[in-house]
Image (cartoon, rainbow, N blue to C red):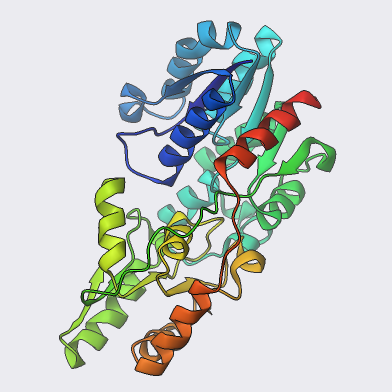
Length: 334
């Protein structure tokens, strides 16, 4: 098969979606398919709408030569990918990542809105740009040949919010790799690397850690992003991982922590909760005292031992080969 993957970010850019695109491409090629990738470059510096139009023309020739397009988001590359595919009579499959509209909205209003409540409570408060994003996303999802979600949680939210046909949707879980390391911590540093977005709840985390560090100078918090190889080395040496976001679909930081047997504290508002609920500590992202209590507990010898035991006992795997084969299987049924 000739496959085109469209993605907003791709290595050397940093982020989970970039690694997902890279690994999916390489695995599909190992299975014998011819795979090309189109990603944002100068589009990053263009205004909304202009960048979509530019990407539309950028991918036309490649879509024409492909059997199917796998678009790895719903808006940035999803919209132009489905648009071109429809014109050329090609199949397009969208694999959702996060929720671009929710992210943009929370960033604008700077108010803590959970994803599960977003479409019920906030639609009447959309500005003009957000109304357009909603309509464009709805058109894209309805006109794609198929939609792949990584969690049933996000799938149920989107089906209702965008009035989707459930028969045009599937679920392909994220990558759960085999255990890669089990290193002791070098320092009591918590790893909370995240994009600088309001929804990541880093403001609350910084407040809590300022209080904790005033009493214990050994405690550290790391929130910066690093290239993937340096990030993994950082994780191997850290004390624990913490993700207190307002909501997460399938957080790569947590999945990496599991592979490296690092205890973690994670938001309860997470799409993979049912899969990983026995592997870590979960907190209400709106409850400051609950988060502080979880941090304090994992800092005790007994609390850390129990948290370490939980993550070590998690051994579920879902390989890139399985993911690639599931993508191909879905395409063959269209």
